[in-house]
Amino acid sequence: MRIAIDPGHGMSNRQPGLYDPGATHVEAGFRFEEAEIALRYAFVLREALRARGGAVFLTREDAGDHAPVAERVANAKLAGARALVSLHLNTVEDERANGVEVLYRGEASRPLAQALQGAVSAAAKLRDRGIKERDDLAVLRFPGPAALVELGFLGNDADRAVLLNPARRQAICEAIAETLLAAAIPARAAGPLGARRGATRRSRGA
Image (tube, rainbow, N blue to C red; front, top):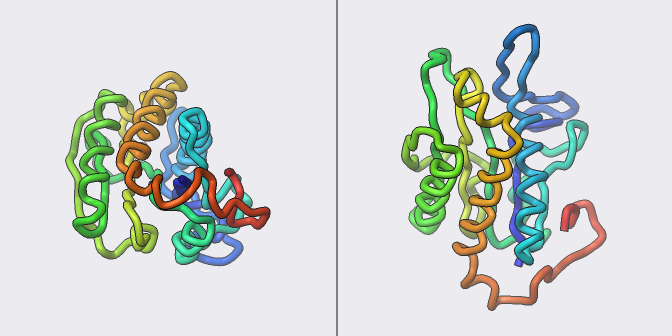
């Protein structure tokens, strides 16, 4: 079965031809961007899923890859994905805000959101902020199980240190991979692994 990984923000996310960095934070003269960090996580998660026999579709693969947010779900569907996870980082003006939260839409995706919330919080060793239902996010309008994971707060020093740590990133992605595949096991019977694999842009990352 194929799982869609959506690294949040990026090129043409909201406006054609404009790069959307998502949340940003400047520390000691260095600028951290949500879009870039989310992409790093997407690559590690892709390999974690592949190592477990999963096929993967990425909604974008680099900073220049045009990926309008309104088209991401449609592209994932065309690629044959049966579950979707969108990776993001949180931000608020209060730098004391911290922790992991997972957003979902509809009761069908609630079990996945709950499972990801527990798994990511434990792997990251960050505060569990709980799950939140949202019906206004385009990327969650996916016909199968879908969740948006806010991995932590970019502006919080402790969260940021965790998010940038390669070993912790690996552990978080392993936890997400295990959770996604466990949640999607019933869908495996619907078709062979990697079904509908093609050579189009929409099948990249498989």
